[in-house]
Amino acid sequence: MRRKLPVACSQLPIAILILSFLAVAFSTPTAPDEQLVEVTSDNVPGVVLEMRYATERNITGKAIYPNGKAWLRMEAICKLAKVARNLEEKGYRLVIWDAWRPSYAQKALWASKPDGRFLTPPNKTSRHARGTSVDLSLGDKNGKILEMPSDHDEFNAKADEDFSDVPKEAGKRASVLRSAMFAAGFSGVPDEWWHYDLKDWADYEPIRGDKLDKDED
Ligand SMILES: [Zn+2]
Image (cartoon, rainbow, N blue to C red; front, side, top):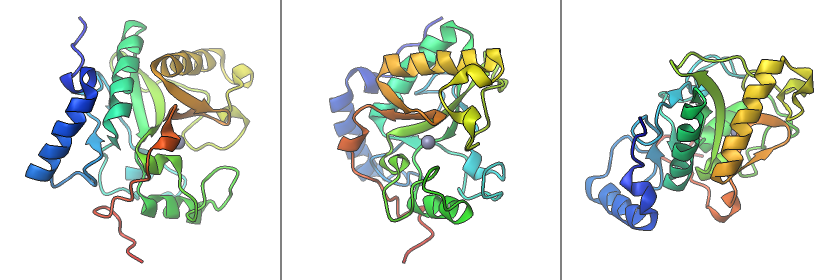
């Protein structure tokens, strides 16, 4: 059975006003910035959170986030909700590997792999800093993580959008994800099948998120 879209998505401009007011009035202590909203199964149906930077399963080998919560702008969450509904009909659930990324995390990633072909150097703004980008994979209807073309941040030929060199089923799933994301208003990048941005990501300011920022230099 289809769940209703959150009111915040059908009346987004009003919702953003209300959310901003509520954020100021009640100042949610855990939100790293008032422009960010926590991604949960209430606003993205069936979402599975597997925030890799909150675990050791990432290129640094260390947990660099203080917890496994995912944060995005409401505009991105509303579009992800559409994608989740679309995929639910096909028997899939969205898995989130990363969402908004604070600057200290970008620095930690760069320190571990200082290669501009794969990562944005800390002196430039990563798209993830804007709260409009998300790294995704797929789970089955029970939330079991499915095989995809590559692992997160696996920077090699398996990560690109040419799926001819990966297992057929994995390539098919990545194509299904890509179609659903593009249909909902996201764009992708050719070298990372898991990375998506709101099409108009460049119109949004970076969010530094000082509350979570451990690097106050
Ligand atoms: Zn990404």
